[in-house]
Length: 108
Image 1 (cartoon, one colour):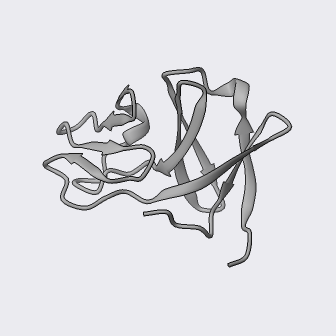
Image 2 (cartoon, rainbow, N blue to C red):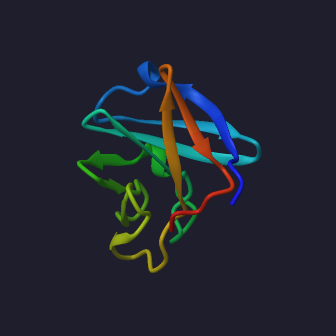
Image 3 (cartoon, one colour):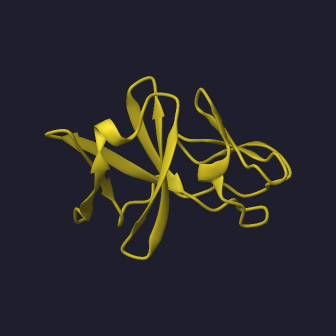
């Protein structure tokens, strides 16, 4: 499997407990900082295309602001309905203060 890591942000742009949204190579990513660890998922809720990055981050769970579906930011797994399908999650590396996301890798 080839590396497809691209620089998305600086670690300092994503404060602990918060989410930032970035458009990268046609993908809209929500980068989530949970206790200093950065996770990357698609920014689109699988229930009704809601903007997950505008939702509420509580530990490893992110809640869609539209209907309350929740996903695990580590895996994209559904934690709470009404969503029935996971969101795509991506492998993240931190290098020299940069957040790199493998856009070709799907961890979900």
